[in-house]
Length: 119
Image (cartoon, rainbow, N blue to C red; front, side, top):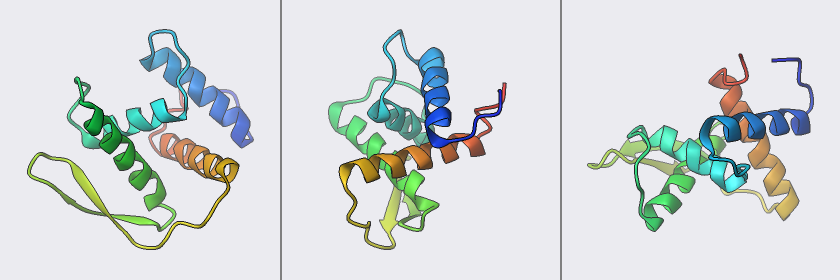
C-alpha cells in the first residue's frame, strides 16, 4: 500500500478495500464495517443473522474497538460462543461528528493491527 497519512486517507482506502473484498457493489458505510468487525470477533464465520443478532454483532464490534481506549474489557464467552464485555468507564459526551471520528480512528487502528492495509 502506498504511504497513507491522515485519517481521511486511511478511512477512504479502508472503505474502498473492504467494499471490494466484502460487498457486492454498494460502498460499505460505518455500520456495515462495524457489522463485519462483529462477525470477525464472533468467530463463527458469515451466516444468516437475525435482526437482533446483527445489532449484537455491532455492539460486539463497538466494545472491541473501544477496548483499546479503556472503555470496555472482555469479560467472557457465553454458552453460544458470543463474547461479552464489561464497561470500565463511562463514555464521554461527544457530538455526533466527534463520535464518528472516534469510531473511524478505532476502526482504522483495528485493521492496522490486523495488517489489513498491507498488500
